[in-house]
Length: 251
Image (cartoon, rainbow, N blue to C red; front, side):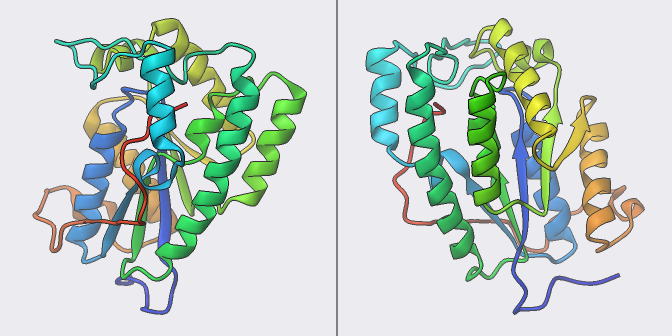
């Protein structure tokens, strides 16, 4: 078994993707705690906050133009979001432009992580979560998607949490159920174009075990049975700052 990587090694890149309400944030917290428990230094990056560009313009159009409600949806307080679920024809070229900018910003962000004192960098969402908003049934859009996938750095492990749309909306009611089904189908199609590690739905414990098993299969830092009993992390994960303006909305 090995400890954390040597100081001159680049960090292990891990990303989490999935439809809204898939339980991504919970699983990121669990993985961070388990890696820190083993003495690994973990850095966190949120794609919308730390990578995506033109955030203020995206927020303005989401609220002022499309009438999106503010806030985060919960079972007791549903929110009607209108941003990435706006699928008018003219939004496709707009998204091509925005996603190209974000792809360039992502390349820059990954380069910056190489200078961070972290063994593992975890991305809360990645470019995949934008590409899943595109009409992937179009040959031209698929060609564009493959181009960006070839341009941006690919994570060492790209988790896709394949949650049931009905369960996801019950946890986080922000988007119409029909859109969540469409979004899940887009992720499934994208998984055939990108090297996803697919994590099937289940209880929090079962999903976290599948995630940890996939990590240990690629990077054998310990045995899966070592994580049977939760422990306090030796050092908490670090929120990385890459000099980006806060507060992006998915578009």
